[in-house]
Amino acid sequence: MEKVNLQDAFDAVKEPWSPRLAGELNGQAVKLARADGEFVWHHHDDADELFLVVDGRLRIEFRQAPDVTLEAGEFVVVPGGVDHRPVADAEDGAEILLFEPAGTSNTGDVDSELTAEPERLD
Amino acid sequence: MEKVNLQDAFDAVKEPWSPRLAGELNGQAVKLARADGEFVWHHHDDADELFLVVDGRLRIEFRQAPDVTLEAGEFVVVPGGVDHRPVADAEDGAEILLFEPAGTSNTGDVDSELTAEPERLD
Image 1 (cartoon, rainbow over the protein chains, first blue to last red):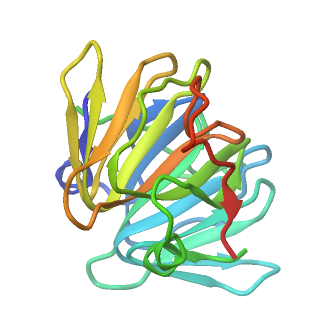
Image 2 (image 1 turned 30 degrees about the vertical axis):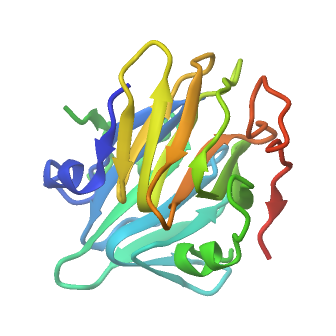
């Protein structure tokens, strides 16, 4: 059983919007991502998704609900099927931890140049 | 979609070792607990359990592996079936976030005076 230090792990996450796999349990994945600027609008048909901001600030836009802005130490659960777009406006972007079913695509129903398979962190 | 601020939420967690429910997704629960002193040895037959320390320090003892000591911003996944005992020695204890299947008992296979159903945070 190896512990993960989030700050050390984020040091290895260079590319924005390209989640890295930091752990797996009960068929769920713990992913770490660097957010910078606007992501793409998308949804996940059958997967709820938790966003926890570890550093920085992340705004999550919804088509049919008010935006939610997360500061460090704040999380929100986006239910499956809900269109959303994460945006990190601040200069340094944001470091975010995601919990979601293993195998969930980062761009959900959308095929985008930002679609990426999560590589495992060393 | 309501965000959760971890520090605000922990302010409502008074009792040590009595997890409160802070979110649910994909059949999994996000629980917040205050750790203080020694918990009981136990395991969860069919549930992996993630411990993330938000504040303080938590040592997790294992019968057949070295202890893992988590500082704030560190997590570990304890696989199902593995006997473990969380211990928070520091004077102020520790604030921990748990991620595990909904319905997981805090004391696993053991019936203890510390066994507690998680109440939902307001």
